[in-house]
Length: 166
Image (tube, rainbow, N blue to C red; front, side, top):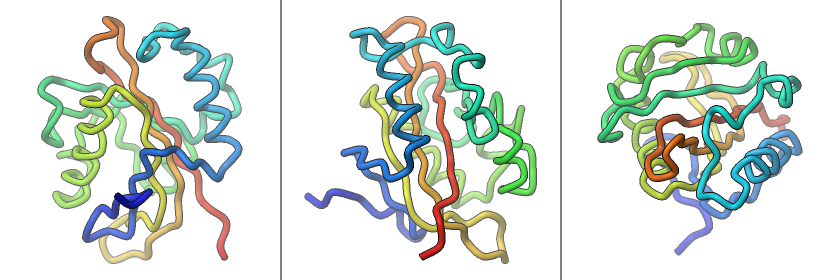
């Protein structure tokens, strides 16, 4: 099995091995690991915005509604200001179905569904299409599950960073 899986037709890849290149993403993963304190995943209550201030512009929170398989099951609770700039929109309060193209929403729902099913973080990297008709942007991202019950994922926290041009 390859180290990464391509999210066809996009030039985005899933990396379950978490081979994070960006130091900010490694720091957020370390924070998440510390907060889970031996549990499968931390809860949203364990995460304090004051402890991750430098990440806030590029952080997102997504509410997960069972069964977590369709774009309508994922609603953006928070998008950092740098992400609003990157995507040229604020998707706060919208589901993936409302905020993205059908193809992009389905792709993100699949990725979030994997995080929900496995109860573990995933790394995304590659060229992310920002808006139809516009160029893609090279990004690296991590998606981290959060759960109050410890049994089901109720929220996903993540961070998206632009990668330096080659």
